[in-house]
Amino acid sequence: MRKSRVLLAGVAVAAAGVTTSAFTASNSFSGVTDNVAGYGELTATGVAVTNIAYTPAVADATKLHVVAFTVDTDTTGMGMRMTLSNAGTVTPGSASTCAYSLVSAAHTITCTLTADVLFTAFDKTGLTVTSS
Image (cartoon, rainbow, N blue to C red; front, side, top):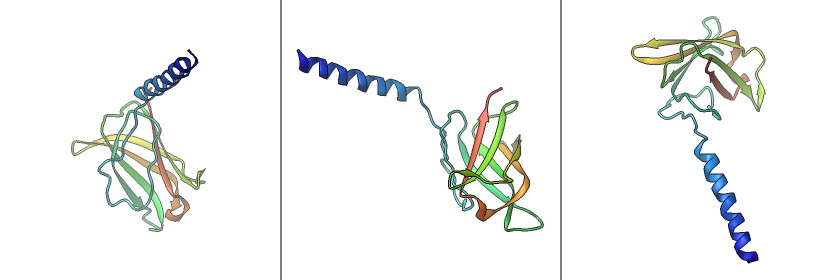
């Protein structure tokens, strides 16, 4: 009787884990190539990023000015925010304003930094998209 309870408890825990993971989706950075200025890390669901383009500042090419994300869906009316971080700490000055546009049939979120940031000042690029 004791073995069957232990087995039943194990089955219940495994079922709970499977059920929980069934409701947890993830974004993907599939198809992203030739991007050397950052690293993508995702924990939310809903928008898949397929390309990232980094544009340096006109006055100083060692600094980042704009990041454009190609995504798989229209994000009109959604909240969009990009975060740059280094070793887990948000990079000072990396606040951005982001806007959605449809460019040659591609859904694009373009984030412009409020202050240009050195490319060496960050090692991760994050994108948060929230529904209204």
